[in-house]
Length: 327
Image (cartoon, one colour):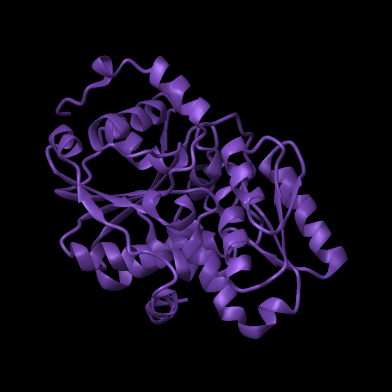
């Protein structure tokens, strides 16, 4: 994988996705005494950046996309993206999600003409069973992150950001299995070798964080997190991890409290609806003392948060107590 392949992905995706805005955030810029820009992938088709990788993967399959059943596993957003792509390319698809997935995401997948199965009590269990089902049935398994085409599709986000603002010093990237982080890192480093790149994930689901520090993939114990789209351990053979080790400066952890505050403050100050996984980059800006430079780009990866959950958060987080102040 290299910049040429990511450029090819961007060309393939023209007309299939929306180039999303890069918006300067006045309140975060004041809070950090820097220029902070938000990449609004929460505006993307299907409400998430995941559609970039999914559509590029299906487009690359060509006519064979209709010859085999597609099978994938997802906490929700990747599944919805594959379901959308299956309809677009007239393909058959089975989407597997854990029974604990967010109801909003399950309902969104169910609106597409695909088979939807609720399997397992968490993402790791669902993924294991999904791979076993694919092996038995002969279906083509599409990983949410451990796939070169998926990675290249997600990397097109970095191209858009750096074309809009080449002066960006730093990128903050929500991170689970590393498909987005790997794609963004490959593209951004090729365009600007000096740019700093940080992955961000919840302290309740720190698989990439712990693996990055160990220098190898490790299995971690997970707790419930608002950032459900980033939950789950990483496959032992994941091609994302070597890329992350080579091109990423560090992986940061944020608290569940900071994620809650980020969701509420994004709605308050920017009128942006952002799910927990999409808000972790902003959470890092709210609670990390690290100097991220003068021009900071943050990817808001998705908007698919349950209305009940959002209403609960709005009642729990007193915005007056978490108003941003200069660090």
